Image (tube, rainbow, N blue to C red; front, side, top):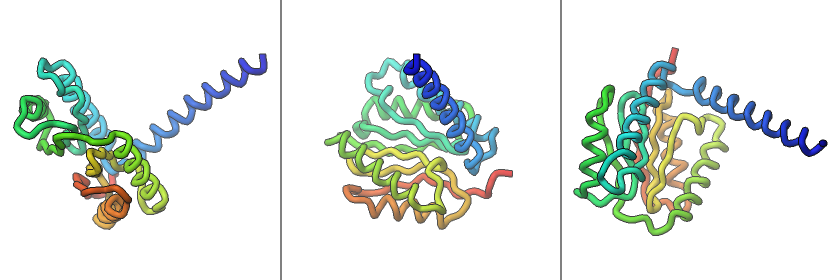
Length: 183
């Protein structure tokens, strides 16, 4: 009986922490709630259409959207049908202002990329001036891709510096936008 209560308590706590984290992300975002909602819808629509596509390989592409700017990342050959399909799909979704890509032809080690992501995250979390919730990150073959919205240029520069200073990073590509704080 005691184990059942412990399990119920843990499930409730997990639900509470999930709600708290989601609330934290929404309230610390530099975009208005409406813009966050629109961006989430745009990214979701693109991802759904890529998953539904008849072109094999489009479902593995990561999709980010900040203030109508879409960033597509993944392991995709330059000029391939996958690249063409992803660009076509993204450009034809309502609300998309611009589409950017960061594709690599191969990924030698998913594990190494994941370790790099954890190290960059740790550096950003340790910097009390930055909020990890304001950026999304993709790591492909040692290349760090940052997507987000911050309220000051110096924060964008600090995030880039943290990524560049991380062991194993080959290069850093930033799609971080600087915007005034949301009202």
